[in-house]
Length: 197
Image (cartoon, rainbow, N blue to C red):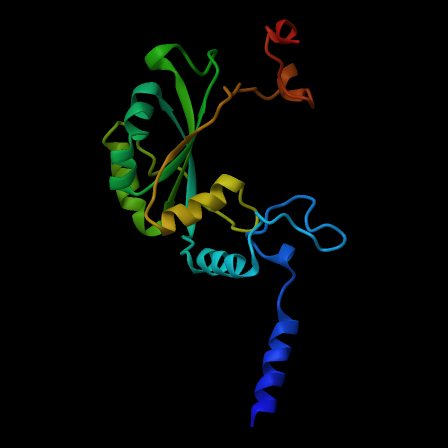
């Protein structure tokens, strides 16, 4: 009666993945051609436990809206208490001073607002309370296969009821159709660009 059990166990070992195929395996040059890995690298048990933890996380189905608000509304919307209360996250991009954005309170922020469809009413009320009605702005589903890295991260964060505002490190410039900046395949250049070289 023991032989079938041993055969079953042997076939399970054959079906295991190679270490570098696990989700938690650090990307790099390892394993070497002879199979050697540094002792500090995770073992098979750790990788299996990590993969089970990752796969057990809830991944929320999100939608997004593209919104522009002034600095005062942005300051309120980016507060952690409001994000948690209204259950949404944002990717925030400041618009460079110019035709569409000013200084101080007149600064414009381009926001991509992420939330679960069931939270639509809460999100719209949060924006409306700050004189930024978004009810007419199109709601677009976030495709998990085509999503940006931060969008994939937000799906898991929302699944764990965590909400945040991610602020871009760059200012963005608005190019109008028909201008040389819009037509340039390399995009607009900053007037002080040569000074940065």
